[in-house]
Image 1 (cartoon, helix red, strand yellow):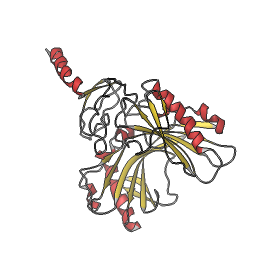
Image 2 (cartoon, rainbow, N blue to C red):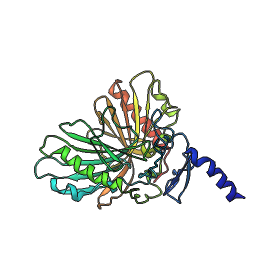
Image 3 (spheres, rainbow, N blue to C red):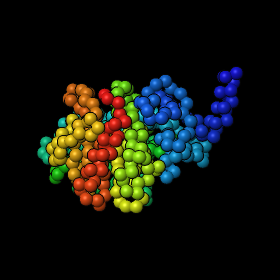
Length: 353
């Protein structure tokens, strides 16, 4: 009877696009009190508000209709929280621009980097990232590789960006950026195009590889939007706590004031353990934290809270950290006081690693 009932339910829901099969893992109902269930046995995922499987509506909310010609394309990203962005990069291709090495332990969990060291000039950071932002408006694709369309961003002196959209992938794009600090002669757009070619070919071949399952105590299992509740956010004047801007995989979250220009962004970060360079060290709810005025640009305050240290895949010591940024036209000390308090509130909701 259970099998028959399940078949009947699926027969109704699948044609309506209300059930999606995930190749690896499910995102089950979750109250934020423990690790978000992501890595596990395959299963069905229903269309729920906030599920990143579903496409944009004021950010993203529900699945788009199938193509009008009746064709259906596979979602090559699959489960958002287990897809490996490093599978889209090939350092060997980028080696013609200088020694190139993969760094999978840099940035948030939706990013992967290749660092190129040209014979002269600064290091070039090639980043591939999964994003929930729609493609740039009024920018038609410059080229198409199978089901992958490439949109070119405007060239800049220090960076060059390409945005990839994939047939069958709703609610997500892939960005590839070649960037350097300072002046140099490395051809950034040529580098970005080389990386884009590899990524487009990989995406056109089918579902991308899964990342290694992170340890149970990794921040990769957490949802940033659940770490700050309405009471914690009351320190932000006019904040709309009920309308968070959720990032890819739940690894980032933002809140904005409705009465001013103050914004709070909370995300996770991997990299060398943070220190007090350019700022100050403090304690927030028993965690060490580092506060940097203008740490994320003008009129910002950045607070980093190291959560756990681990051996990176390249053998180096790396750290997973909370990264909280407040921005706006408030005085610097007020921005930083707000950021430190919010970082402490977020850290308090994490178990001790």
